[in-house]
Amino acid sequence: MNLDHIRQEINQLDSQLVRLLEQRMHLVDQVTAFKRQSGMAVLDSNREEEVLNRVANLVENPIYQASIRATFADIMSHSRAYQTEQLQAHEK
Image (cartoon, rainbow, N blue to C red; front, side, top):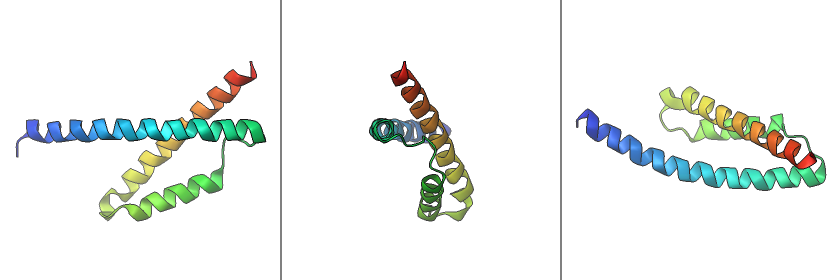
């Protein structure tokens, strides 16, 4: 297998990841609307820890566990920032 082929496979996976992340953000929009209506805070530390633990347990190869967990922590951080932005825009 050559580097170009490996990169082509990565590009294909990246395309799939983008579609999945867009689906996730669509759900984040729904979470934001719920939090707006109920007055809930953006940050739910317990929920985030549950997600991170669940994701870590899904990883089959333990050498990837910390990196994948950190990736999901980053995804959730960006989701929180997006929720905050949306809630503030709605208040104006």
